[in-house]
Length: 450
Image (cartoon, rainbow, N blue to C red; front, side):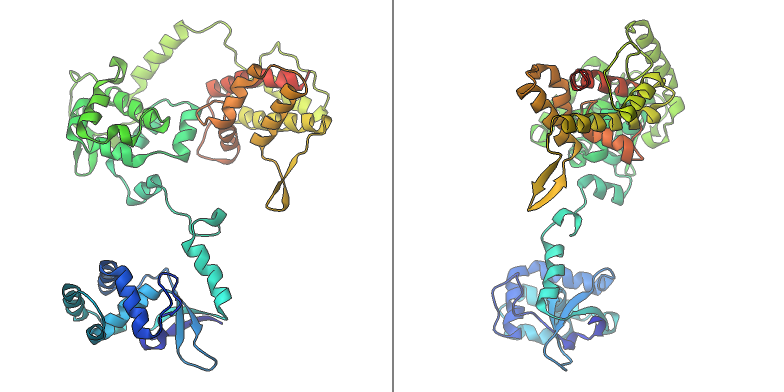
């Protein structure tokens, strides 16, 4: 069993093809595929004539019987049906097929070159059971990663490369001064097709000062003006303040943009030379960033601190390792050591939850489909909160921020975000986000380490 090469004539359509009911003959098998696919089968045949068979997909076959030189096609029946018609168009005369479709198949056959596809790369399995495993993985979804993992719309847009909506998204990601939580949301999911729909509307582009020239987003506005509406649009979509149903026509889209606050609207009086947004660089924003930083400095709260954990906070930690991590977090200046603070913050959270669960005999494993597995961090924290409230008599309202962080990705204490700090090389923590994460979690830690 293994890789083999076959001709079209050696391959038999599967009478047990799961796309259709059981067939009684090869003619019946081909008829059922034609009835089911019609135009799709012609499109496949046309693609084979134009580009050949996909080099990424072999035909999965089972030998008809011992010592036979013919093989039943377990996976690839559509391809083989198309090839049988292309190699012998007269077969259509004995089948029920639309006259117009038959004529198009017959015309297509004149362009078919059999030697372009033969011999065909196949893979022989020992029995149907072996073949079924691979067929199920291919056609029944991701199967926890074992099957074919479909691309998101964002991944497809990246692969196509440089579409206007993707240009806008990357522009905001790079220069929008986003928080860690916002970057985390963008890294995991984004409704790129909705943003594409907005930018495809001329009236929307006019309102935000953009145009599409040669598939590139272009503008006559300075960088710090065009970023305003784009940032608002991106954050509204990723934080689900608006959705595609609310933007389903031109009137709704323009009304949405017109409803922006003045701080989110560009100043159209500041027109200059046309440029693409991909040509903007960090230097184009430095003046506005400096101004905004100065404004923040003038209103800075005197309680703002330079470490993740307030220096005066004391926790009664008895575990030596956890106490050491706590001490390090209290001593490092977060602005200078963002990554070095983010990782131990995530570790400190899990070790604190583990210690509490051990001290109070809370199970750390959960049964999943008959197997015992370690609970994930989100479940551990939730279990500790439940114990503090239900057994320890604490007020659940004290843990509102922590509980919110368990389920809301935009929270600075999102456990998914803390995990990304450790495991995702594209997510870099910001000092402010780390401090906010501790502020949200501090009541939880204080109760855990009483």
